[in-house]
Image 1 (cartoon, rainbow, N blue to C red):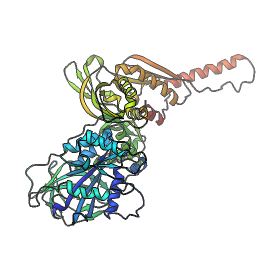
Image 2 (image 1 turned 135 degrees about the vertical axis):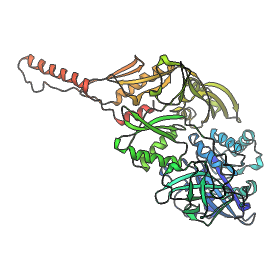
Image 3 (image 1 turned 30 degrees about the horizontal axis):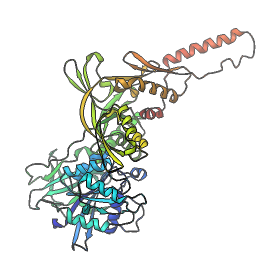
Image 4 (image 1 turned 180 degrees about the vertical axis):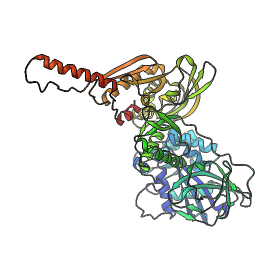
Length: 598
């Protein structure tokens, strides 16, 4: 294959700016799919992606395009990427396999936080960027304003910007021709030693692990003996091919091409995303740089409702990690739930999506504990401990200093909402850093803020305050000192470790009252009184009681001496006292899910 006819590119944008619709139109116009195909978002193949209308996982497809303007048959390798801040890792690993990117901006919404973040991500990878203003057919489109934003904020010339409507197929051919003109052909030579990047994987129940690779140098044939440079494992290829909405076998993959191979790999843990593949008989001298690892920012415990499902949960997580390398987990035991896993996520949406995928794709019924961030604790012996679960926090007398993660928070909001958003950010312990006006009606604000204040409902509240026009992006900044406490919830004097959480001392009292009030609503009444308490150490800071169910034990007494009723009431009193000592409080699963929202 002549590599001068190959173009590898991604589509990047803020969430809901039309990436997947643009990918659909490109597939239609190039003849990769019939124009009469049913359904939309062809590259969003998960039910979850279609239901929510968001891209969760980067998808790759090979396209054959005959250009009228430039003459010749070109091969495009297109990667559609997610837009939400929680899936930045999917974007970064996709960009590593490309030479260029199409940056899509909504003609009505203009530049949003993830637009800026993905632009700089592409610049870091030295990619050629093609700016596209999408949805120009909408009544709300303000093309002149958005053009001005792109020129002033991102530094493009006005002539660089393509006007398009993916829905109405406007400007698609111009985008395809611009890809040929602007995005360079891949570098490298076929005669060099094989060097290929593993940029994605997926699990197929018939083929086993399908490994997607970008050939940087050299050539792969079905007879090539492959070697993973990180693990040192050798593999014999069973199927070599390219993906054009279905698996298609080929005789070879040459320098610059993107394709897949299978090698009867049944254990997902054998493959590492970002690994370098080479020829076992003629290896390259050094591996590719791989990816900058994204450390999980949010941690929680995941347990099966039925303890017997633990082996199935472990297998499901291994397979899920194959397609989501940013998801990490390790085994953990809980007094309340038994065996499970401590899991790390890039954000709360990421956590929610992983839970739904595990439950849907692998038919599991799961319980999640309260999410926490990772704190650093310096003990009196100068030992630094990373604390991602309340159980790991040392006793207060053993702590010399505690630190919590802070992030640099970038928000792009309408000018009229500045005061409300800044007040809200400060109430979440945020510190104002800077602001910059993006035209007459939008402003970019930067805050320094504890990550623990962002992970639950911050994004939803910003959307509410700005009537849906606000957007945000954040990146880890540093660890700063904090007064860290462990808040325990006691049910009838017994600590329920599923509800334990770590937090700043100044937020503890408010959170404690909110938790016990919510649990009072959610825990059903028992035959005995249930005391719900929130405590820091031995100090109770909030308390509520769930009244016992009243049973009319004297209903059978139709008269006679009052002592008969008193005797029955005394027996009932003693029975409830015994129940309170030995009875088990039934906590419904909804209680655990509702507590996550507080």
